[in-house]
Length: 189
Image (tube, rainbow, N blue to C red; front, side, top):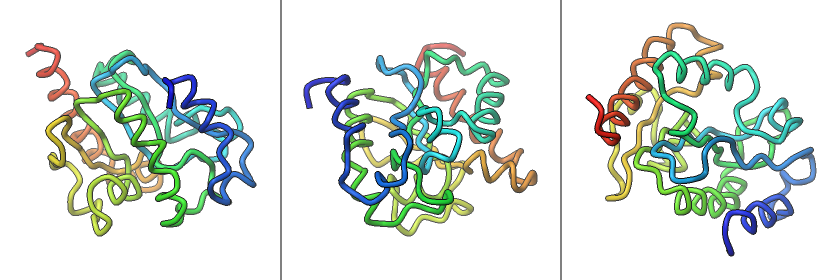
């Protein structure tokens, strides 16, 4: 690919899997693309994201934004993407073949953005980026090192927090660990 604009153009015209048939928009992401230290990766666009063409703008995205603001993680420090770029019908979990088909797009984003920290928001992202057998309830909150270029923090998806408030504290503490690691990277104490 010849740079970010070419990636966006190619990605938005993608018809490699059946998800393209029901989409309104390809949802590439949102945030700072100029080497932010943190990349958040969710599952896939929901209804609101499909309508607006931007990642994490629905209820779950608003919750994520509130937590990031509360922890003083600045917008210039992150980019938010998803494993799949088109909304699965009725917000179902993306199928394995859909994830595999879309992974080159996410790999390109990781390679281009060059994050120091990747945050897997939910089990779909954790399974795609860490281990196909990963169970988010068992690995969340623990740093995973799969590359010398970045570390991974698996945590709950904000939508799971909206469904089960008992997960709220764990989610907050996980994102706080991300903030603390981010501050180390940036040389803050």
